[in-house]
Amino acid sequence: MTAAEMLRVRGLRKSYGGREVVSNVSFAVRRGECFGILGPNGAGKTTTLRCCLGLTLADAGTLELGGLPVPEAARVARYRVGVVPQFDNLDPDFTVTENLVMFARYFDIPAAAARARVPRLLEFAGLGDRGGSRIDTLSGGMKRRLTLARALVNDPDVLFLDEPTTGLDPQARHLIWDGLKGLVAAGKTVILTTHFMDEAERLCNRLCVMDDGAIIAHDTPRGLIEKLIEPVVVEVYGEGVRRFAAAGARALVERLEISGETAFCYMHDAAPLLELLGREPELRSLRRAANLEDVFIKLTGRDIRD
Amino acid sequence: MSYRFRYLVERNFKVWRKLLVPSLIANLADPLIYLVGLGFGLGAMVGPVDGRPYISFLAGGMLCFSTLNSASAEALFSAFSRLKVQRTWEGILHAPMTITDVVIGEWLWAALKATLSGAAILVVMYGLRIVHGPGPLAALLVLPLVGLCFSGLALVMTTLARSYDFFTYYFTLFITPMSFLSGVFFPLHQLPQAMQTAAWILPLAHAASLARGLTLGDPMPWPWLSVAVLVGYGAAGVSVAARFARRRLTK
View 1: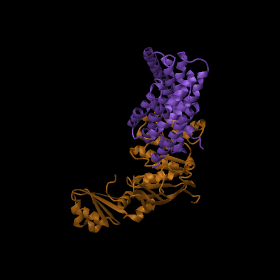
View 2: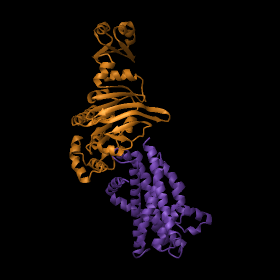
View 3: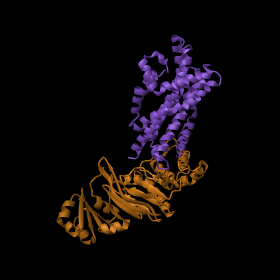
View 4: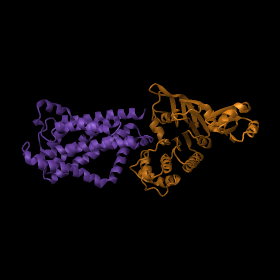
């Protein structure tokens, strides 16, 4: 592990009841970068994060967090780490302010010093006037922001976020994203899991795609799109898409997938297809640039995961 | 050795402090009702026990019984809320705290709270003039051991439990039979010899023996053995609980 690396994972493996949920995962995260772990539900993202924190014991592999071996020195490593878990676990027996102060105490921070940090953290979370509120009176977005603020009580070098915006409305998601961008700009290392492609594309310097426990792609968001997928997508909607595909559309594009009543057409040059579409007035269409979601679907398929 | 378990004690104390008045009233009222109701009501029918009023005999047992109940309630229901329902333990483990810190913290806190419940009975015993002078205050040294013993055992159930229903079995199959077997409500020597022998295997008979010995001056057959039994059960309980918690949470 070099000084520029905040996290190094080598050959990580974890099985539950004979099923391998993390198989031979390796990656490294540099200091000050935002690294994303993408994958459908059940891909092994959360297990990977928990192993990195020493909260789950791996079957094989080596982990180094902030230069310290995990799980051996996980406790010491966590002094410099902040965690935003997938499910909120704020302390419902305390108010907003008390949550922050008590959590700081778990890091050996004296109560007076912890209280001094509260106003800035509340401001960061947009909860400036809610310090005395009970946790059960906060909205989902407020709880997430408070959880993020709580993860910052120890002024960590590295933040782990497990699906930080799942279940939030767009306004709340944008607030969280703004907060995370600010943290990365301030030099924090951020490691997040998500299944929102726009989130990954916006926030991450580099990312990996996990499926069935293994990393199947690993690059910058742009790099993944450029390397793995055709640059132009035309989505065609309507009852006649199957006929349209068979009647010549397939020959004009590089790849065509039909899902329900939508045809996803992937290509470099959309002109011939758009000309053909001009003669199909009953079909609606949308032309757009390829994005990370297209890469993700190409890599992991269209089947539902549970 | 890490002392971070103190943060868990601190957390629970801060929450308890918010509900200080109702908590103290419950600590006093509940055992007081038992003591006065059974002591005077039942006492009028049974007459003296071991040469003293029934209420005095009962008070010595209630000292332990109240400590046991308080330790069990805290280490079962409250700790389980923090473990499963509220995910409080999970949150704490994101900080530089280990499962051992959390389990030991819960153990010490439950014992501390239980000691307070027992001490409340001692106050009532002074109030009812069942005990006099400074001597019976020695029981305050035994109450923490009773608390540690029963919170340690309760934490084993807590770290195994899937739901609160689990604790009903613990009470009906363990706590309640033990209470009737251990000389809390009536003297141990009323029971057949085999049951008396069985009672001395369980920790509550030892707790009751120490409590009555120190408050009422009854003979204590094996005082140091009794102390060792309480400490042994408590320490064994908390070690097993830490192991179960580790298995449950690091999977």
